[in-house]
Image (cartoon, rainbow, N blue to C red; front, side, top):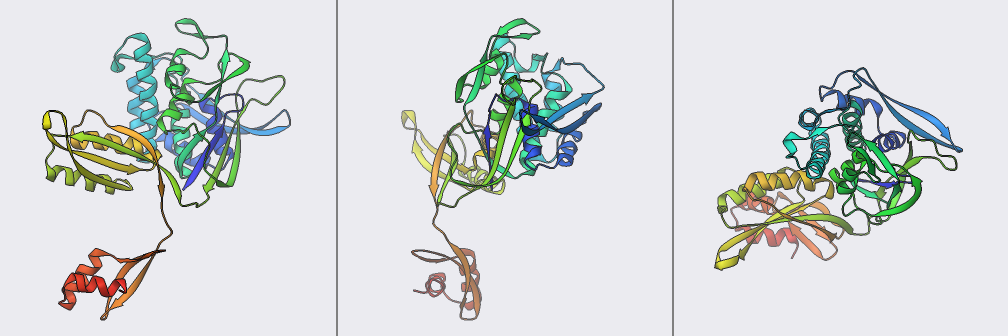
Length: 377
């Protein structure tokens, strides 16, 4: 489990974040390979080193043979959906859908009719897929981001001059921590804001972690008095017994018990840390169930989609939780010549139920007797 802490020193753009992740150790060839699986052609991605105000940083540049910047959003989403590995595709699609939905709301269009202007070029797709692939290669499970500095003034778009931050960026940053800046112009791009949304970035102090690597990603703008960079720190959380996780919940009054059991199994197989069902009484006295899913924050979007598809629910609740887990170890004990695994923690030991049942069947004893022997009681 690796965490990524983003410090947007002068702001954040997709190419800055991608460059910083490569500078921190993400393999550039893995990034290029992921982008290539989208079917996008006519592009090259280069990451070069430069010195800016005494600081060595990386700069990501996308060279294209097709300089069109206007495309239907659905076209970019379809290409992102073909990306491999699948977790990279999930995050890239989520980022592009976030952009599409924000643009659609701003311009009064349904998402399927949105046409991206400045964001419709090759570089948007390369940056989005590239960042998601870099995070996947680095095995980042959780992203934390500092307050994003918002510039002032105006930005030129296909719709004319618009205030900074651009309306799409402002819509995507709803709920994020921001701060004023003495810089004018666009300091946070819609691409960066959408990626932060897609990876479930947390705008809160990170937990204690052991620093593994630091990367500096430079933007294209040159500032007179400071380096124009975003910084990423990669680290291993220090094991304090606490872990920041996400819970998804949805109320269901029209799903059978058999189907709920199947969905729980599918969620666990898809990477949920736990999934369970509790009975509930809804309005008008209707009996119902609440489906709960405990997940890593980085997997919440994907598992939420599985909840909706598997149950037919129209929505779910999502909130952060802190789990405290005591140190435990798995050991194997001998029960009358049959091995049985058990988990041992600070306050006792518990045998694995499947092993107990198998041993009981082999020994011809009641399972409760085998469990008592295996537990050492």
